[in-house]
Each structure stands twice: as C-alpha cells, then as structure tokens.
Amino acid sequence: MKIISKQQDVLFSGSEVWLVQPEHVDDVFRIVVTPARVSSGSERFGVVIATDAELSAGSLLSTVRSCSIGFDLPPLFTVSIGYPLDAKPPFVLRRNRDLTPTTWPAFEAATPALTGLSERMPTGGSEPFLAFLEDELIPALADALPIDSDDVTLTGQSFGGLFVLDALLRRPDRFRRYLAVSPSLWWDDGALLHSAERAVATKPAPGARVYMCVGELENKARFGAQVARLPDQMKQLLPSAMTSLDVPGDMFAMEQLLRRWVGGSFSVEAHVYPEESHESIMGAALSRGLRRLYLTV
Image (cartoon, rainbow, N blue to C red):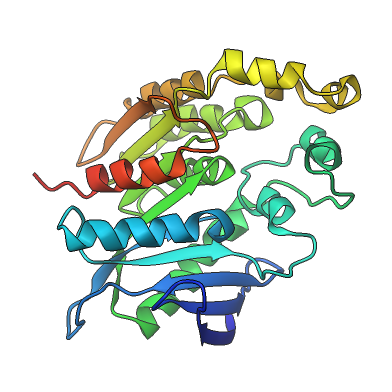
C-alpha cells in the first residue's frame, strides 16, 4: 500500500487523513484516523474500522469519544474508510463495487435510475476490499500507531452491513467484533444467506462477537409504499429483490443461520430498534452496538 499523504483533518479535531493507494484495489481511499484520547506509553489500543466515511466518520468519532469518557467504552482508535472528496465517480457508486459480495448485473443496470448519475461501477468487489483491510491497512495502522491489530471491530451500514457479514463469512477470525447495521441481505437475491449456510457447515466457529440491528421502520410495508411512489419506468428497472424488501426478516434469517455456529466464544445478537429508519439508525446503532460488543461482564 502506498501512502500518498497524511494531514490533519480540518473537520474532525485531532484526526488525521490518509490518502492511500492499495495494491488489492485499483483506486485511492481517504482514511480518517482518530486516536484514543489517552497517553499511549507502551500500551496498544483496540480500533473500530467503519466503511462509508462520508456518512459515518462523524457519528463514530463522537460516539467513541463520549462513551470512552464515561467508561461505557474503552479507549479506542477509530478509522473510517471513504474516498477522496472530489472522486469521480463519487462514493455512492464506488461503494457499490467495494462492499458487495457478488457481481449482480441487474443492479448495475438499474444504478443510473437509482442514483441519477450516468456513470456505472462494477459490483462484487468485497474480496479485494477485504484483502486491502487485512493485508495492507491494518498492518500500516499498527506500524504507525499504538494499535493492537488483533483487537479490531468492523462496522458498516446498509451495503456496509452486508460487507461486515461477508467479512465474517470469508475470514471469520480476522476481526474480534462485527457490527452489521441494516445489512442489505437482499443483495443478489439473498446470496449472502446462502454463503452463510455453507460457512457454518464447513468452517469452525470463530472467536468473535456479532451484533446486527435494523430499524422498526425498515419493514416490508414501508419499503413497498416507497417503491409504489416511484415512476413506472424506474420500477421496471429494479430487480425483483428490491421491490419486496424485508430487512428485519432477512436479519433474523441470518441470525438463525449463524446460531448454528456453536463453539468457542462465538456469539450473535439481532435487534430491531423502535422508530428508527434505514436513514436514521446509524447513531443509535453505534452507541448500543459498540457498548454491547465491548461489554465484558
């Protein structure tokens, strides 16, 4: 991994922004790194890594800072991964490539209608993106900062939540904790649910904690009403899996599959948050999910 630059972030006090060029992904990433608010000495600290820095960096930073002051969380570094602010195509398309586990041509064809952008990006690039995290970014962070590379939590929302669970299934022992928020398990007609069936049947249970959550308002009726308001031309472009979303149902189906992974210290939880939607849930999920995952009693 080539580190193009490091500079102090003007948006998030105390943070540093790295621009990096990976070997595993042909792109440049913008990494927002915020240190644990303690004197390091010889101690090394855990880190929370989040996808979609454009959406999550501020919430993650404020949640970890506030909760660590009150001892609801231990001192933690936070790392949010995004793209250069002037990236073209923008992050809303690039994330489609990096966070999805399989190539899905039907979704790619619908992307211009969904985003209002003429550009398209390929899908199904989660494996090289995960390799970038494991083989390049985490070692570089541990070399530069007092970070314990064996004490890493991975979190993301929507496609980011899908990626978190994909990472669990592909490399079960890489992360100690997995926080999947509103995971888009409808992707490619439930491809990751099928992957989970295979993984729990063939791989030993990892020593990890998994926490999943969705909002009460991410229900089938509400999504159905949203789809009904779309122009007919757009509705015709949507893959059928996107016209009948059942985010809570998919999450609980994944929970039941993961509960077959018995052994060691593996655990999984799934929760529905009252009055939260797909767009509003992230703040509550970071607070409740991280506190639960780091609970030691």
